[in-house]
Structure formats: C-alpha cells, structure tokens
Length: 103
Image 1: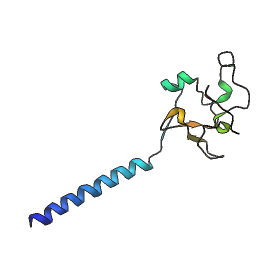
Image 2: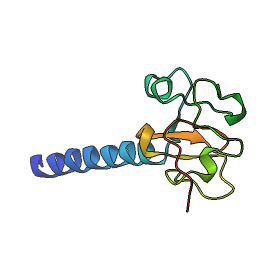
Image 3: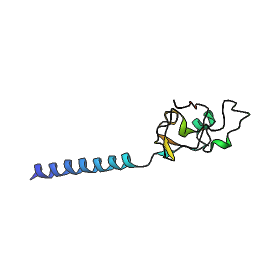
Image 4: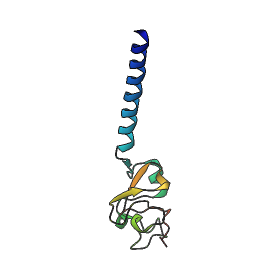
C-alpha cells in the first residue's frame, strides 16, 4: 500500500513540474522598453524615426531592427528576438546603436 502511494506522489510531482515548465516555455517573451538599462545604454528606440540623430550620428533613415543582422524575427513579425537584449524582443521598427545592416 505504501509503495503505490509513494509512486502516485512521485508521478504527481513529475506531472505538475512538467506542466509548470511547459507554460513558461510557451509564454510570450518580454518586450524591451526604452526604460530598460540595456536599452538606454544602446540608445534603443521602439520607433527608429525618434532616434536623436545628433547623439547617434551613425543612424541613417531606413535603418531599423527589422533589417538589422541581429534581428531574429521573421520578415513580417512586428517583434523579434535580439542577442543584445537577451531573452527579450525588440520592435521591428526600432533601432539601437548596435545596428548592423543585414547582408
């Protein structure tokens, strides 16, 4: 009798853990905000047209995260991953000083 109760508890804990982990895996990743410390350090703007051109002379019209080599989203995705902001997503219309034109 004790053996079956123990097996039941161990199995129940395993199932509960698996469900909890799978929910985290499918949760939407956080989106980078301009208030994020890394975003501030890189001059990230969610809208590239709002970049301070005097402060970031490297910026040129037409540059945005969607056409940056670091952007991990698909062509039409409004948000996508970026290694500069580990685990967070950036706006395809955004820009930061790490911008590197996609080849």
